[in-house]
Image (cartoon, rainbow, N blue to C red):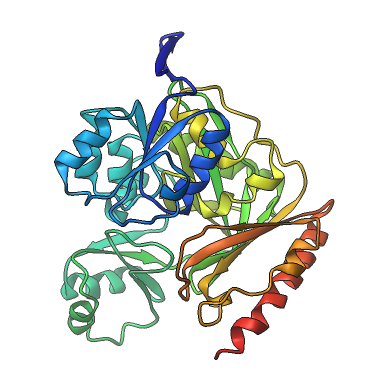
Length: 393
């Protein structure tokens, strides 16, 4: 089974084999959603033993620079998608010569580089923080003068979860030495945004232009890593509508097929401005597995395959809590029994092997009749895990 045509668009029918570029937990959960729909999967991942490969039909372990391996991989699938944006653009270009890849390489090219992403947003008049592109210490010093302090310096390439960035609190620095020590090839300095809340909108778009947004998630970070996603976000209806409209306009302008996560700052007056884009399933959408009509992972497969999109309404208020490697002690998992005893808590572990501090190993979602109940239970459940982790300090 493979492709079919319907009203001038390409449909990848259930039973076809899809390629997954990247072997992490986002790929794993997408594969599990697609398997239920009847699709088969082939994972391409440089490192053996990846958690997505464990649930796939087949797995290729080769470097993203290995063109012959990518060509062979592309010949064996009907279409492909990506599970994170740090895949080299050239690898997707090689793949696209053999099979369609969604989102297309041009979308990846924009979203995996902060300079290109900011310039895309600016050129299309999507609200984002003022910024400067810097290539050396002299540029950095001038950027700080232009934007004022505090400001944020980020590497242009391949940054995520707070990696490759630093907050600059004052202009009292030897910026040439600072630049040398960071080792960035190129960077983006962003003006500091005084925000009330961080939110995100995940929107699905298929090949015929049908869009379906998920409700706005309110995101709480610890050490630059997502800790909680709270749905529905505690914002006004007007702000939620503005966030969803912004996400829809970006997805259409960038011509994304698949999922696009739009991370946002919400200012005190309710204005929303874009922080970052991610053309894939997103950590802040994991709650959809347990509290939504259609999970973000099923929606991603539907969009990539050209199928009609599923419903995206919240069934009940939910709070998702990330479980990092910090919760494990000397490689030993905590006692999960108190989570399993509460029927409102849904535990998801990714089988990623060795836990490390800051490494995303799983999550749990609390689903309750009211948001207040969900927040209370989520915070209590997480705190019961932490004494085990802190005992090793």
